[in-house]
Length: 316
Image (cartoon, rainbow, N blue to C red; front, side, top):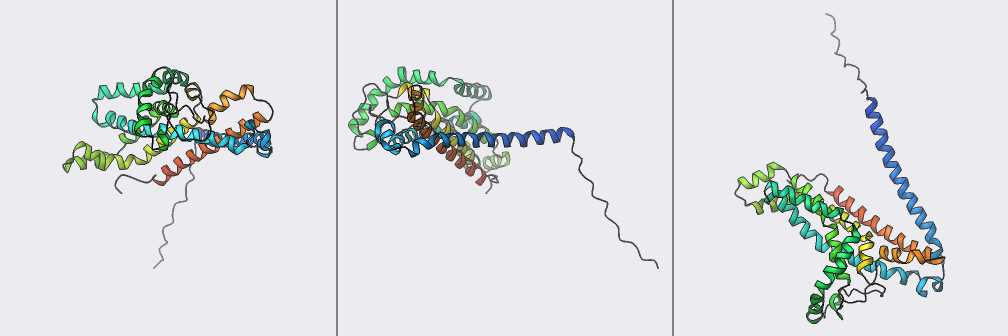
């Protein structure tokens, strides 16, 4: 008897990549590397230009109190305005996204989604004039009421502003500005909730809200958080709307309804940079470096949240 030969495996075939695939892969890789180089260049510029301010004596810094006391109130004002905007915009954006996705008729949903997205195309200077001429006077009675009834809280300690040009007004305007960003991302995430999970919840007798609570919101939680972080990044860097409304210049305070408001980093740079010279320019660039680091930290946090729940399917 002759020994039978074991079947041999066919030689592995090499995957042939088309020229278009190679070009696209190279372009994508090159774009990613280019963005990293730009980011590194911006960071290197900010650091190099901020070094004179970091090493200067306190008396050489504008206001003569040192770099920390100069930038500290600006950082506080920037964070206060952005956090207020986030608290105002996130619930509204999530509610709008749920209404458009699961409650509104198709024709109304399409029109409403278009109108909400159109808010992102309005220039920030228009928002600033709207906040100054319309919203600020409307909030004056609330400022007075808050000072009388909520004055025991440091946020409403007063005295109430008679013009309405306060950090609270700025926060609300910024909230309207970032609402389209959060709403658009939330709508996209909610619409991608697994249909099997939604249909299973409805088949088990759940109401529409119970279906949303059990199948949609858990699935879209990471998307809502990521969209909120992107909106927060927009609010942190807003310039013209804040510069038009806010009469900043005070020290570090969390009072939201008085005329003594700390300015924000972006608006302070926009207002003071044209007249700055010497170490004053380096000081403003150092404050820009602080804003760069804050924004970078916010974006990294958003990316970490998204990656942490990247494998979430809605069933676990």
